[in-house]
Image 1 (cartoon, one colour):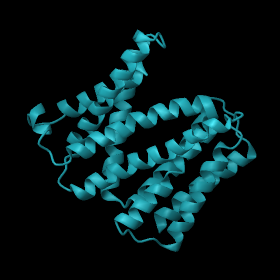
Image 2 (spheres, helix red, strand yellow; image 1 turned 45 degrees about the vertical axis):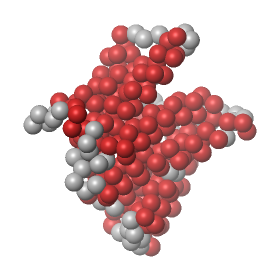
Image 3 (cartoon, helix red, strand yellow; image 1 turned 120 degrees about the vertical axis):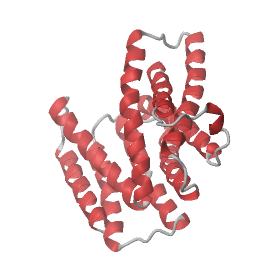
Image 4 (cartoon, one colour; image 1 turned 180 degrees about the horizontal axis):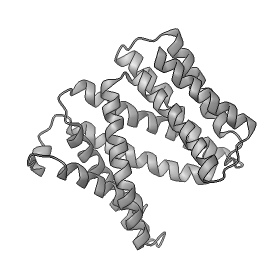
Length: 256
């Protein structure tokens, strides 16, 4: 939690100081998209907290799959709210991607799940879908929105909530803040800023019903292959089938 909070602070700093022209802090309060950026920041860190709890209570596999399955919400937003067209090939690719998410994580990080914790994957499903949808809708409803300023407010909002959680955790001796936490947060912020910036740019250029499924399928593929080559993770045959399906899903959606 301390590392994540430092990450959000540094990421918002990247946004604020990366402008060529001078932008005063006061100018952010007069932006029409301010409220949406604040809600996006809240969704960012709340979903992260749910991820952390869910990983402990229901396991890695169910947590990851729940997050990836949220592409259904993103596609629904694109089709229902934004009237994005859907082809048979695209629908087939999305269904294939959902199967890939499940099969790639099948048998990995599974734990005995207590029924009282089954609400956690559901919260992650809606939280992740809300993150993606809010970033897309902000660009649709506010086409003149500056993505750097938008993300600056988003990350700073997440930092403000995070620092409150850190203070609460330290006061209860739940954890301690170490130099490694701060260093990890600084390094993470660099990756987090640029990955989120290009994600929101991708959402601006492409339909959400195309971009999010391709993004998630590619992420599952890269994560599984990286885990195999760099972290000596074992891949079952069913996991390998999932990786192949992820590639097929990307191809189907892209060519649609």
